[in-house]
Amino acid sequence: MPEGDTVWQAARRLHDALAGKVLTRSDLRVPKFATADLTGRTVLDVTPRGKHLLTRVEGGLTLHSHLRMDGSWKVFTNDQRWTGGPAHQIRAILGNHDRTAVGYRLPVLELLRTADESRAVGHLGPDLLGPDWNPEQALANLLADPARSLGEALLDQRNLAGIGNVYKSEVCFLLGVTPWLPAGALPADRAAKLPALAKRLLDANREHPVRNTTGARGQNLFVYGRAPRPCLRCGTPVRVADQGDGSRERPTYWCPACQTGPAPAPGSPPTRRIRPRSPR
Image (cartoon, rainbow, N blue to C red):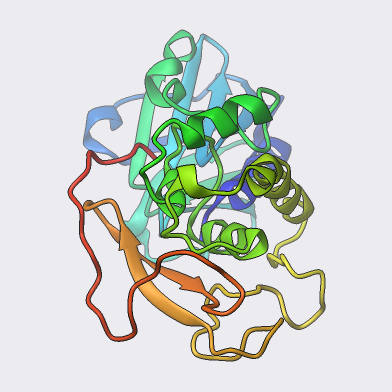
């Protein structure tokens, strides 16, 4: 599942393959930019911003992409067979004399002026893996709506950029509170730890293809994806329920013994509250 660490890894692969090299192939397979041609331009860098990817090329242009749930960028040598999916799922091709980057199932792909990147990512809060990381601002953003559930606040990229559904569940477990706890009810000592905890988890995983939040081999995650297996700490069966902001419900995992706070009763349907869609 692409979260900040996954996107950081994708940016590094793309940067290593493309940066400093002239494009010899360019194919953007979305109607609005199908006639755009980047061949002959040098790729300057590929930068992650939260869950967004910014591929900057000379001439003041940026190719902005977002993976969301199913998108991916694959890098191939020029004698390799492309294996990221069927050809009709390809949305972008960027190639040079050595490597070809192929974007599959990209739900967001747009070409914009580099000077206008803020149109795409200006709404994002401090980036957990970026040079703009500001823990004080991130915490202030999270607590700005004290009635909002902590899980929803963590997923809102306007508060802090990079956390997805996996880290949402894991951060709440490590804080000892349920994702349904109102952000304003988070004890002050735990709130103070939250930004550093989230950053430590993403930092620890950005260099590794297999995400691990436990530090133990063979048990990669504390709660995410573990229902109804026993909690790694106390043995209580881990539970799962949907949580969302009304635009999309996401499976959310927690231990009812290790985590305090409100939570759906066993067997109850998800509670759906209509809120404005949060930018991702």
